[in-house]
Amino acid sequence: MAVISVLGSGSWGVTLANVLAEKKHDVCVWTIEDAVQEEINTQHKNTKYLGDILLEPTLKATTDISFALNNAEYIMWAIPTQAIRSVLNQYNSLLDKNLVHISVSKGLEKSTRLRVSEVFAEHGITNYVYLAGPSHAEEVAKKMVTTLSSISVDSDLAESVQNLFNTDYLRVYTYDDLAGAELAGAFKNVVAIAAGICDGFGLGDNAKAALMTRSLVEFGRLLESFEAKTETISSLTGIGDLIATCTSLHSRNRHVGNELGKGKSLQEILNNMVMVAEGVATCEAFYELSKHKQIEMPIVTATYEIMFNNASVSETVQSLMTRELKSE
Image (cartoon, rainbow, N blue to C red):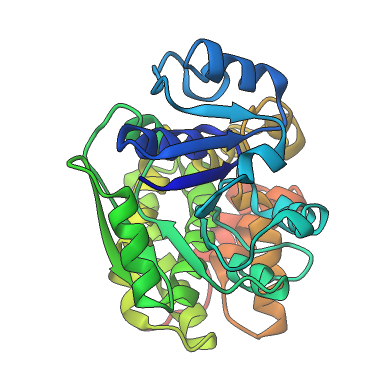
């Protein structure tokens, strides 16, 4: 049995915390919400983020991060990417940098365009594993068959986390392209917004299929720019997660795009959401990154213009369709 601290009480963090509790590990969730703490501890539910899913009675929650971290052997980070640095700064003295730190956050830090592992490295944390793949909390919470990858530059750490989470319904593989996988996890959220715009605007299946396929070309350019493995495109964290996020009604990023396609403003959409759509801030980061590194990313650019400059969907589509002809 391992002692595991989970930082963050959203749907994915609590779902994975519950998986670990089912496996008889000692798990404590840190939340900043008193009501969430109370409900997990007394009702064994997290209705705000997971509906009526019943949680393991041994799963604990606290608003005291010191208590959550007490005796921890693993720390799992399940907070929005844009909040990670502030938590690292605020609680730096409490964090044991020698422990295994597991991140399930997907995105780039907007202000620095850094991957999550790079933000951790700046704070002296290198025992780092990224856990990702085509997975929605709503399905894993119901024990529906799902696959993930445990990704680290250290194969021993990757295998340790693989064994920690693997169950008969949650199959975990290991992978070693950390940079590529983190870029994939961030990039697919932006493409999911674009896919949602296709749906909301009524562009049809043909357009959405073309968008998803051509996004892999942009992703390939991104991988080459960071000297990551091109085969990551075909991995669970690559095309696997892209398919799940672009097509599922569970996807928060696809939801943002869908509402944009229907004509709603970005602020109106975000004001009506309970959970964070990581692709919004990440789109800004990729847009700036594409200019800085001179990477051709027309889908990222188009999505950025629709979200932040109120560009017309129809005019944006026309612009993409009338670009200079080229071979595939």
